[in-house]
Length: 94
Ligand SMILES: [Zn+2]
Image 1: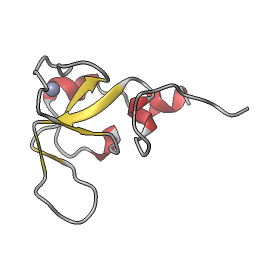
Image 2 (image 1 turned 90 degrees about the vertical axis):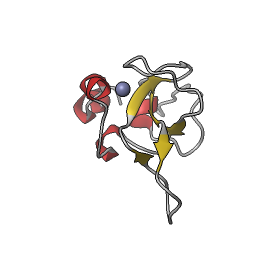
Image 3 (image 1 turned 180 degrees about the vertical axis):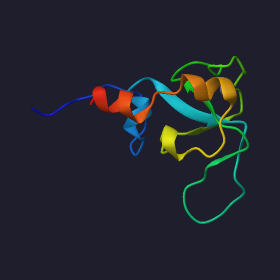
Image 4 (image 1 turned 60 degrees about the vertical axis):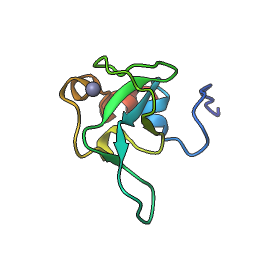
């Protein structure tokens, strides 16, 4: 039976986070280069639709990285890293 997930995430979004209601965000993104951009500096997590990160930072003007999985992030905010869903958790829900 096909599985359907209702989510406001755009096409191409990685579902391991967005299916759980989270998206990777960061204040800055990498300077222009070939390919998809990644966070520049620490990455944070925020609930889709929320205006603040898990750790409480306001995200106005921040970038959302819909294509990234938690495992793709090189540098996490300490608080958000502790809260991020692990691949094992995400796999349990798929
Ligand atoms: Zn954070």
